[in-house]
Length: 368
Image 1 (spheres, one colour):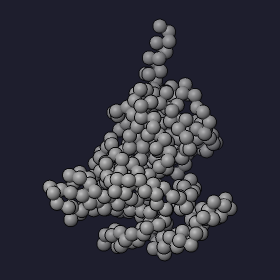
Image 2 (image 1 turned 180 degrees about the vertical axis):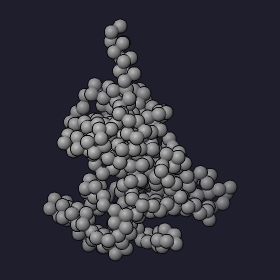
Image 3 (image 1 turned 135 degrees about the vertical axis):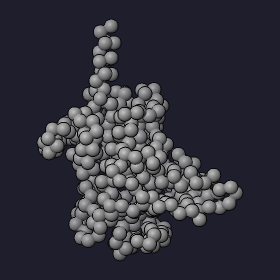
Image 4 (image 1 turned 180 degrees about the horizontal axis):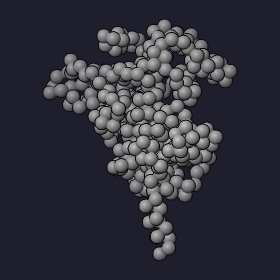
């Protein structure tokens, strides 16, 4: 009887929210927003306790500090009071996610690493048994991009192709981890769905002209391994999906493509070259703190071929990523979801997320 009582007490006390990487650029914003909604329940977790404590002091103690190293095995007993984990750092394996499942904690991840998210998808049955939910693809890309493709698909009986394009402004100061991830993807080969079959493509290849509307005009964008293209191909059953990237600076976008064609990006495998490029990106002057997302989907409606364009233009991609993560976290914390592993578009619509945001995304839709 004593053990049953303890379990019941643990269930009653299962109210904590851990934001892993909570003292980082995006993590701090996620913590702050969630602490406003759930005061006293939010913990900024990470390996550097002094950083977590410093951030906690900045919040007046509203967000609490926690030392946590997810690169080592975490005993599920540590998570017995945790209701929700929001993951803001990249991982290479699923050990920590499995600990969350064993502890019955829900899990949200803002990662764009397709290979890792594929590993987490493999835990669907484990999560279902434990009664836990994992929501993946939470942010801008993946995240808002997935939701826009879902929105576009609602206008069609059958989606034949979806092309996602992300423009990032060089004026935004991204965290070091985000810059490192972007640089590391420049010399990557990865698989996409093309006509229903997996095809290997190269990062920064296959340039395509994309119309970003009157304000931003037409830009050439190149393939990039954001995980949204793999996710929506699977969840929305779309036979051809691609994601491309461009920067608000046309010449730097073009320079990146030329570097790939000339084989210069292969030098990134040398640590000193990679470090130089990361520092260079962090120091690039000019540009604006902006982002734009364009979805070009084609398919069939009532037997006719139809094109759907979705465009969102905004400021500060990192802020939006944090707001989307906090929006999803609030809904999962308050209402819960079906146990298992899901991408954001399987559980929410763009309108669901907008209801939690401070401002409307102002999605511009064009049907042709």
